[in-house]
Image 1 (cartoon, rainbow, N blue to C red):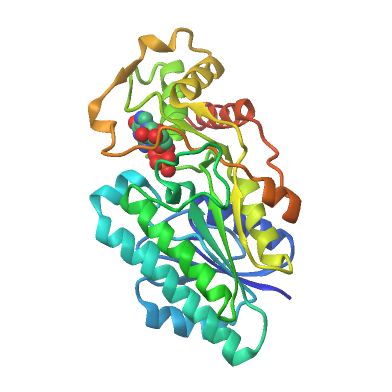
Image 2: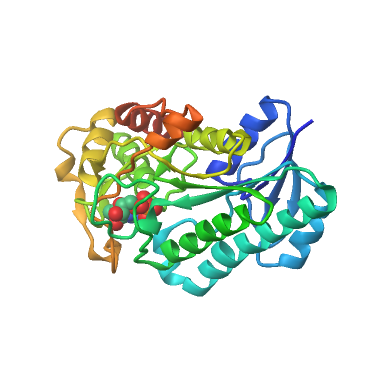
Length: 315
Ligand code: GDP
């Protein structure tokens, strides 16, 4: 039986990944930070530890001796990383290094293959000069979140030459009804649903011109599993290749919620603008398609529809 260890198991990605691995018959151990309440997935063996406690993580990994380690934990938003830059580096960067080192020790003590999948981010590219980006695009982050993810991405490459079957997936924005409300997609779909149902009358947003490559989160966790199980470890851009502006997302969500004339409800609030904000992040997942056979399964319109429907039903 394959044993997997998933950090951030209560988050959007962690919960979808745990479901996929359990359905495939794996034993799944999950890590949550102390006090962190997220999605509980029946069947996951839950452990509580702070990723910054590298000694505790090392002991835990020796006990579990997993075949696959997925590092999905961390401060997951750019906005939060500006508020807590040092903590972002401690958890996302140093935490990832501690986990890689713990995985290397499992290889050393058991002699078995241990696959490691790091959830990196398109934010490692910062304000890229070229669009779309791929695995060869220079790593040049412009915010504390991107910096921390760049370190973890490079740490995975170093440990790949150091005994661990380490992969890093440069994940573009990936969304679902489990996306927390601090992210723009969920903020838009939940507010559009609330406006449609007369529970709200305004949506305050920041930069409407920012363009992102939004995909369906379960597709992205599936890519992680494909990478872990491929004979060769590597880096992969995981993206749809399609870019849309925040404005387009708003228009699609309001239309789906049945609210005509979205402009009446949307107000631009400078509080939601960021010190540095990439104007366009769009990825070329050609390598993942060729090597892993991965393709996204959900279109932009379908993604918006699923999120809006879930928010209409939830209220
Ligand atoms: P990120 O790309 O990982 O930072 O994901 P977000 O969903 O937080 O942000 C995506 C884009 O939406 C960024 O370019 C933000 O500047 C833009 N945006 C515009 N208005 C808002 C807002 O009110 N909240 C958030 N979170 N992002 C916004």
